[in-house]
Image (cartoon, rainbow, N blue to C red; front, side):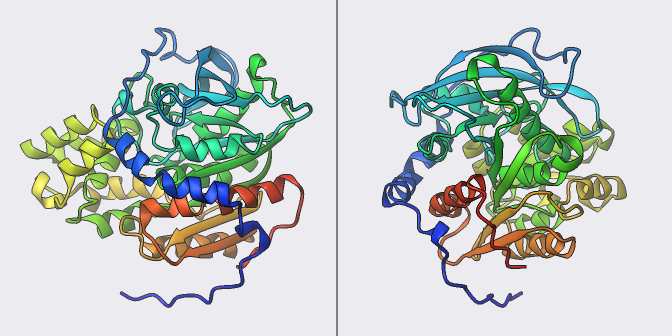
Length: 406
């Protein structure tokens, strides 16, 4: 299937970024790949962190000093804390999620912008959680986060439900991820040591899995966290339609993502009973995915077809399709402006899926600026667009008008 390339408008000023940011972003591609294969072991979760405490979503359950190092031993002028905070499952039940709050130590006074940052796929094992890797310089997107702290912005990074806390990570369950992203912002603002204003400006950012999470946060914010002063959302490489993404990856080297997503959905909705669909090879693969990180999982699942690992296809069943469609984006217009981008040659998340999300949001009256990444693929997209994404958020924090191109 071929898609007509839209005309490329002249690049506005916010795309031009500094050479320092763009050069550093490109230079980190190899470091990100290396980190994906060698995650540091996460700190053990507090014994009390698995049980939600009484209180509101976003309330702190536990906190402790941590650290932020983009590369092993690399110093940063920041303070960091690992937190456990209250959030909400996809079905509306209270849960506890872990994360990391990072605040620049630059002498700034007054309200400081806060970015609630949703990472891309790191894996399902607890050792993959960002909060366990950010202190050691082994977190995959740490340099991208550093580019935000260079701007003087605080950043909170959620681990998502079940990643770094008891239970299986609910990978690709959109409402759960959206809640975790929004409640991370609430938690950061409620952490006394961070010194953040509860009425300070907030930006939402994420790519790939983080694109789904940030997209859901954007859609949910108006109803779930209306008190947050969200100025804009940056979201890229968004797997907005999981059934379309699964069909695209079936039998390709991204096939492992299908089984990770199935395991994540099954963790959120046990009645789906994934195990009853798997053959012995499928059970072995999924069990390993729950303990490992994405580099191992990607190799283990590469080029598999759903039929290779199942006795019957769960994605063909009405209950599975209904749950996957509950994570589909595009049904609600985000309340704040959105900068959405997608690589034309994305080999994991079809470009057509990103364009469809843009169309759905625009049809509902959202303020969307969509950018086609003309050169590159899935992983490179987040790196080459990092400067433009940061500059777009800087414009929103400065109350400059957005430039929608619906």
